[in-house]
Amino acid sequence: MEKNVAHLTLGTANIGKLLTQYALPATMAMFATSLCNVTDSIFIGHGVGIDALSGLSITLPIINLGIAFGQLIGIGAGTMLSIRLGQKDYEAANYILGNVIVLNTIIGTLFSVILLFFLDPILLFFGASQQTLPHAHDFIVIILIGNVVTHMYMGINSLLRSQGYPKKAMTATFATIIVNFILNPLFIFKFGWGIRGSAFATIISQTLALAWQIKFFSNKTNFIHFQKKFFALNKNTVKKIFSIGLSPFLINVTTCIIIVLINKNLSIYGGDTAVGAYGIVVRILFVFAMIVLGLTQGMQPISGYNYGAGLYKRVNEVLKKTIFIAVVVMALGSLIAGIFPHAIVSLFTTDKELIKVTVEGMRYILITYCLVGYQTVSIVFFQSIGKANLSIILSATKQFILSIPLLLILPKYLGVTGVWITIPVSDLIAFISTAILMNYEHKNLSKME
Image (cartoon, rainbow, N blue to C red; front, side):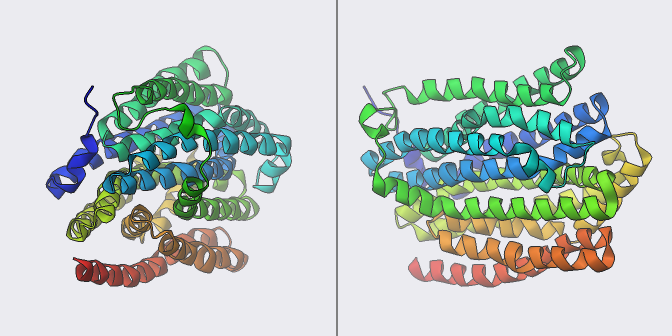
């Protein structure tokens, strides 16, 4: 029976068409995912209340930490798969698939067990109050119980894109969104499960998508499919996955630390209202950030495959086009959020004080928000060609060298305003350092051509 060769066009087809073919499904899926997060928050805000929204914000660091471990495996494996397919090394590619299943099972289980054991002290440390703690606890317990499913779903979807099936990856994502959108209001309003209903909807939708993914990779007509011998952990495969996945892992871990510091400072200087405001701002602006992340997911297999095949001119071309689109998307996002802030925030709550605080905070972040797309693409690009160390440098510059020191200093003198100001200042300086490093990489790729 003829094997599937969808990935072979990555080295021959027109870059613009490839980017459209791979990035459009991923972008649509990520955009839909972000809208799903927004509607979840709207359901919770209107169906449970303001304290529930603030409690949801408190859980963001744990969710980000879970994503960090998921991307440690998923992005690392997806990048390695693209490179190995470019090198026509199909045995190594099958080891990647098998090892992704084993690693996600082990790490996902350990992550959940450890956090569940210390959950309430962790949530209090993250900035929960006596009013928001019950809501945060109810939501995150269910998310952690289903964490293995989430990790597996993310990891396998990354491999789908890297193998040459961006539309199938999009299908899996849309399936979770549609099911989640249907179950959320049903569980929250009809069954009266409150914030727990939203968590149940998330895990159930991901479980259904995972079942479909497993069925697909069980098909023996694919180059890459489940085979018993490849489930044994391969030292070299695991090492490569972790070395590339380390960059997005550290990015999400440092993001987790930043969110904790922001929530704690907002809780001290602005109370639960300020914490809830930050959660709303994150969900609004994340709509545009997720579009860029979808764009980079489309870029990753193209740049990884061509880099592995030694086609450096094509690598340079896809990078330039991705950066241009990302900057335009973030600029449009900044414009829309800047013109209609009150109308957008009012979707989440009718509380006038919460609306006021949220709009004020969002305006600070929008000052440099259009620059974030450039840095996001740059970080993912270095991951996709196996240069994880450069991704780590870029993320460390923004998080450890800039954001954390500023969050420890500015709020003491400027209060809540100091917390909000930290974000645009960090983005601006990070953009400058990223531009310098990317200019060098452009020249290096031109020489390699």
